[in-house]
Image (cartoon, rainbow, N blue to C red; front, side, top):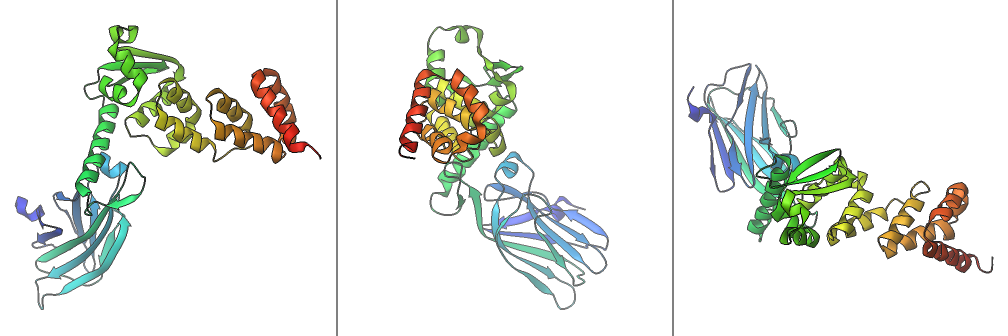
Length: 329
């Protein structure tokens, strides 16, 4: 069988795969073909009476982190007999990540040469800036494509330690990083590298109070590659690092996230961190949760211990809030 038997021809937003002599109980997968940001595959599996057609993106870092949301029309033509042509209903905004996400089962026996035509109506991706889905073929698609590709490449640089030139020594291990990326994201890192400091001489930055997994999440955020669950797990450590290294967008992200799920188990810790890192909205929300909503009575023992250890100014603010809220009751 020649290489052309697996080749998919493309032009504009159309793709076509011509398959000769596909016998029963046969599986065949096309060569990858480029459409939009992704490489794609078609595959067919033929039994005596059925033909399963699959369309899916090639496995890659981009596909894992930003799988396509595709709209397309698909048609299968058989050259045998009366040249049967079967069309699948248009697929609109389907997220396709694996080879099981789109399967078309053709329940008509097809023989002879088979042609599979795919017309891509639209391809969408997740914007790393806004978190919204956008069409890569709308105006500004070149800019969006550039950003998506650049962010994915930065993530690879960190994950695969591509030409790292500095080590981050955390509690429990070390991670290779890049001076240029750190300096671009943090004025504190930039200042370190511009002056004759210990970190410059040793080509290392020591963060002994940060666990290795939290440090990995911190660097992943800097490189634009953090996963949401990692962010949620390490919010407080990320807040501390954001404040220490003056990364304002990370500090704001932590602040907003910590507002979302205040409860009796975490309110005192968050109140302390809000005071420590000057997060006015979080501090006010914790105060309201404790005092106005009366949750202070549900954690009396914990609150008593907290008041013995907290900063005097914070204690004063808590008492002022209690007196202001309960005055007249």
